Length: 381
Image (cartoon, rainbow, N blue to C red; front, top):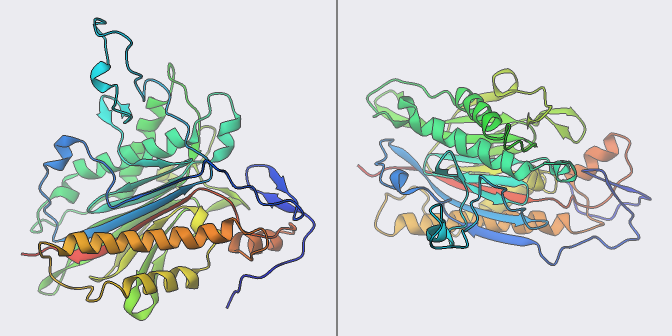
């Protein structure tokens, strides 16, 4: 079992072309951003949609940004007008800090250069490549968020996702991601022209007919080094986890400017039979670079012990309670990952891989840390 312990080193190699020395104190921003919630915002029309799937997610998310997120540029964020008489006045949106694309609110939430989206049957975590902040018109956070936004929209519009249980239609998350990628290319092209790249991972909860009953079926799509993991808390079992995709060490497959990768050619999609009570995690590499698998599983197990009966039927207070427990799961994972990320002498998975590549390094990897936790449940009735 891995333990966190000091490792001697004379040089730390940091992602995004930064270098650190062990004699120097690990940098911590006084402006680091921490946020949490149970669902990411939806526009009003989507709030009125009635779910048809027999299964759903109770969810929670927690985020830690190593530095504040950059505001989205126009036209994705409309600044308020200075005049009530201006025919194009946006005074009515002067307090609306939400972002828009093609007239629609951009779904999800930004965390540094990461983006997460948390819904009843779809969760995702994208990791924008931070090196774009040093490039002219570079905005990785915009790319990571737009990809998730368009991906979720495509899933909602497909009849296989919104259909009743009597149909045999099958979702196609890779096709949704391909369309999302193409829409993002269009949205960030001239005259807007914003550059960036992002990894992408998402999990779509669906169902399959098994004998005389419907059972949950999870469609997981991944491109890059973010991760989806399915944990069975009662048995401390990893049911499934995605495999990282790298071009070379610390250079993951990614979608966007100048990248040869596309969803159609490079995304990997798996179908996993899961159970009620399983916990699905969508995590950026800020988690998996700092915590080993057994630490993630133990963390989830301990958080879920507070929940009690994981398979209880839905009641008036059950959903709020389960969402709160998923929030606890996400918060504890972010806390554990951050503790290692900020420790210049800790042993971490990223450090271990760097050493295997012949790079002298110690400590955790300071990065944006994003966690979405989702509990699979059967809908009452």
